[in-house]
Image (cartoon, rainbow, N blue to C red):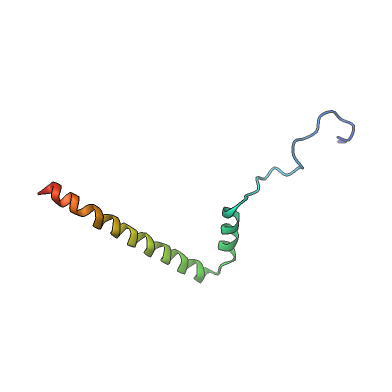
Length: 70
């Protein structure tokens, strides 16, 4: 089909795929460039951080619960 002389043209430049922009795209690229061992270490570090923050939240909230139960 020839769209050169047509009044109607398809939207965009022919690509239907949405491009990821910003920090998420950079993070995704960095993640895929990592080796399996590096990814595993990153996940373990993230898990440890989450557990630490969870412990802090419980420690802050625990005195109120203990006082409520007593």
